[in-house]
Image 1 (cartoon, rainbow, N blue to C red):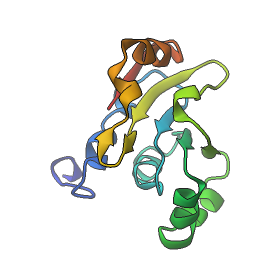
Image 2 (cartoon, rainbow, N blue to C red):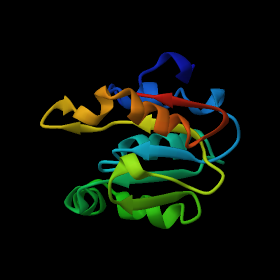
Image 3 (cartoon, rainbow, N blue to C red):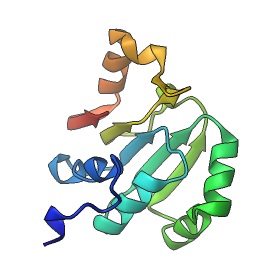
Image 4 (cartoon, rainbow, N blue to C red):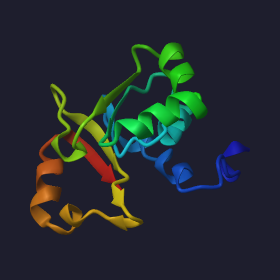
Length: 134
């Protein structure tokens, strides 16, 4: 069974366990990177919708050029949405069903994630029953 196999041999495999326990609705990825987590979730959950935020446009450019992110965007035009900007300001109408938080700088969690106010703000952007995974 695929349930007992590692899909990428990275922590993205753990991120892929979040959608089944979420209420219906879009998933936010804060720290989109080159799209590895999004790719896995889109493959495993055919109705999943992802809104991803990445601060550095160069990271998205590298993802598009070298990690098939452009192909994913073309294959799933109504399921994956990428925003360049501060992920801590991520918001969508009616809220997220869940948030995947993958925000690092120089190999460390960003300082804002050590502030309880940041987590309360993120929680406020969730739908009822929504969850956050870090």
